[in-house]
Length: 291
Image (tube, rainbow, N blue to C red; front, side, top):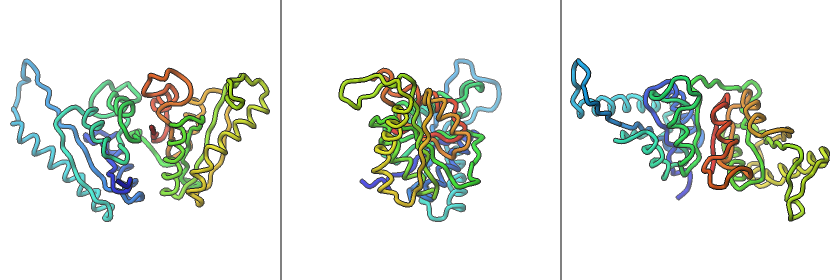
């Protein structure tokens, strides 16, 4: 099945974060010529001692939620006449609902925080669970996200030579092409630098050699996607130090940051790497996690 026929799924619960996610997802569906599916999890919490007041019948509550979703969908259709919009009110928890929806989605979009959980957290538990387990790319949108488009849209992608990084590069160029923006390829290293250029792992201490090898790594990594998107301009940013802080700093002037779910380092059993987790929690702009 072509990715163009797969829907962009957006998680919606009426929170400020989900409203921002809806706006981002609707605009993405319009520019990518993709269907939009607005998904809301309908979860009933039963308490042992009911609170005083009027009890709303379950079916009436479901009907009201569906009516609210239909109104949201109508607003999207009015703004983006060319986007095919559908709604899906699903019984169950929000993480499971969105993870299940990701199985036949082009990408999943959700807000950094929903209605539940602790207000002091930067990223809610739903976003963490979905980015960890979803089978397609996931975009997490901060509720106070603002575009940084003074010189055209910018998509930042982290590069480390891993397979997930390669998929992140393809995703970044696709997004930049649709946005008519540019790609900034960011690669960071710590000294000494572990390289596999000569087969066996070697420690390099020569900063100039490390920088040149890093520049070559980025060029080779980006070559295929750049050839497939000849109209997309791209630049390289090399940053001594850890990758996560470099990407977080760059997110302050970006419209989207793209990272692979796992890079070269860390424990292979983890579903979400330390860099992607750190950028997820601290990015100043929407972040896409690709696996």
